[in-house]
Length: 355
Ligand code: PEP
Ligand code: MN
Image 1 (tube, rainbow, N blue to C red):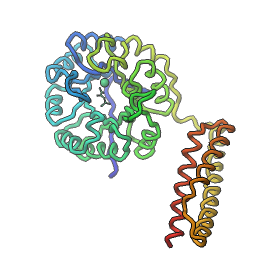
Image 2 (image 1 turned 180 degrees about the vertical axis):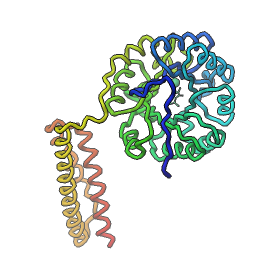
Image 3 (image 1 turned 120 degrees about the vertical axis):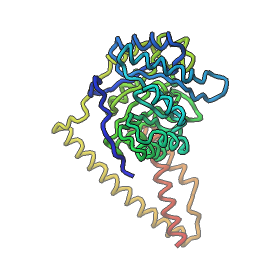
Image 4 (image 1 turned 90 degrees about the vertical axis):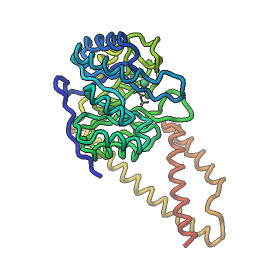
């Protein structure tokens, strides 16, 4: 399904990259909301975020202030003139937000992963024209992410954007949620008109990572940033370690280098032609390698040998990994490439053997 999109365009919000949405993970108290919002507005932030209903991994944590907090967001609008945004996960959330005049809704990562929940939200939004931001699902599934956008779009909502917030993994090392940048990059390729925002707070999970993640998102041509900011981060009721004060946020934003997306200078054009040539050569060599593999397959068939010869496979991975390091490449990367090539070689040999 092709998405039918319209630009979000909010009066008073610059179209320059990046559009910035900032505010606390959760609305906790009226004072915390108002104090954070006022400080952010003073720094020029135009769109305020705050979670009213919080999807927590385990019961017993702070699950959000609920409907009461919507009145605080209304107040933020009135006092600061900022647009206000919050997360919806059920039809009831949608009705409450519409009633309270919330300007922008977002669908959280756990909800995007559930087509029933997304459909329920889409049905509740039918006939309403409000910007909706769809976070990537917790699992690295681009189709599921696009599917969620399609459901909302099919309900008639055209002012959509995607939020890249990273993907869960069992091994948590540097990041709370792995960025897997190739997924939002592929989303951009598939739906060029869809704005993509980056959420460095939930990707990084820690304050130190916000600045580098924001810069990376800008270097990749993302349209905006949604960043958690709290007037007193250390005492936040949720996601304390990843929130920054409005002052720190302002400092981070001011240091960002925003490069132009289209800088097709002559030399860049030439370099791209060289890349195309390299890719063509790579494809030719791959095709040649596959042909030799098929010949080996015929040999193995004639001599009744197994397709998978583990000793040979390990030798290739080790050799190529070592060659990769000599050329300044990460041996793990080289290993991944050769694993993929090997997988396809085995598939082609199996075709020959089973003929
Ligand atoms: C949030 O934005 O506060 C949130 C809960 O994020 P996510 O859905 O990305 O986990
Ligand atoms: Mn959060």
